[in-house]
Length: 120
Image (cartoon, rainbow, N blue to C red):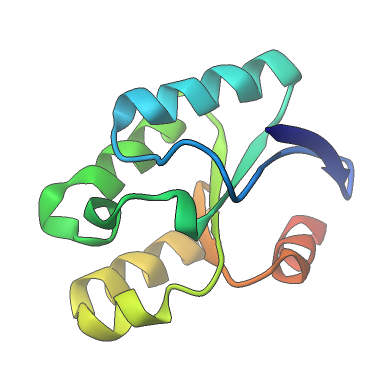
């Protein structure tokens, strides 16, 4: 179940932590369709909803999903602690850092961090 919230005048689709796993572009398209239908500009997905392949950059799953959101001009937030993934992978750590510098995909630990980002 997803709910639409407005944070600093920005419509944000908040995905529930318990839902279908997101492991490929088709899963991302389902979220994108839902977000578009509800008028969201950002989609927030709990980190636990992503498959393990998402956090292994060699699979290209993360890049493909982020690109799909970019193609539809929607922002994507991976919400939650992924430090155990970044500790094991310098390339994932770099990917997260680069994403967080932009305005397309963010890896954030909590909703307060999202509120701060959307305020700017």
